[in-house]
Image (cartoon, rainbow, N blue to C red; front, side, top):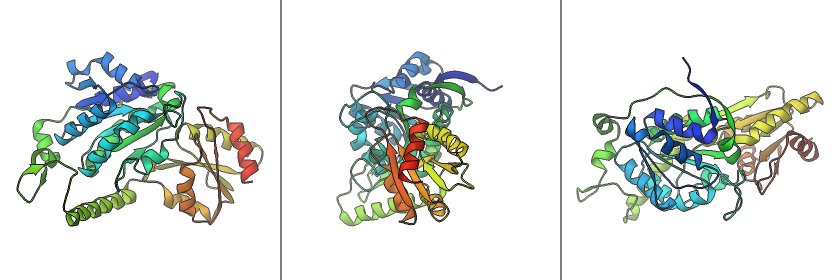
Length: 358
């Protein structure tokens, strides 16, 4: 029998983490994602599954606890919101450089700075472009429902372990705070020590250095070896780009115009598509589910089929840059967004489409 519940997106993340068999959560409270840790504390999984749930003294401490847990082969995660993720970026870069798997959740709020506790999608650059220092990538999943918040916990962890790379669930405040029905995933047992030794060789051997000391680190003082490491990273990223692109199409087959949106913006855009078609304007919606790897190839295929594209985002224009790179000037691409925590309506999107594209 399906386990159907009514809950917030943030709560769904927490319940899915417990059911996945997560070994440890390390976090620090910040609106609008605090319910993740609050729910975990309330469920007390350390009594049922053995999962560690710890409020660290800071975001920096939390991400370094994740670094240590990942280095021991455990399924570990953290969550925060925009300014908190900024504080975690150094540690995220270290984890990527050490090639360790973990799950990071960012429920975005408006900025820059402390900004507002209202929803935003302005962390696209921060996440998809790396955010921290160095040439690294985060596998980035963008849910647009409470169900996907739950589903993407398992998917994020699975991808992180498959590619020895951190993965991020990049949600916005609307998805984190809204309530919907959700089918919770089945329980998975936590990994045994034997499974960790078999599936997570870094937890046993680390990186074998020339002096035969096994260490887990992102540090390499020899530039030739550091370049070798980076070339290996880039080869891995190309493999991810070939194998892990995910997207959703809605009424795109006969579309003259294409809306491109992720997260809560895509929910608004579905209604916009319906309103436009009632007026005889054939509009479709393409929703990137993975923001990295970005679905650039499928967007490119539409460049020769549609008359224009509108990138709809709760920011000043970030994903639109990747859309423009994908189409390479073959079709007009414009941006529409609202800032400061103001959420647009489907009619506003339709009016922007008419003014900028149609």
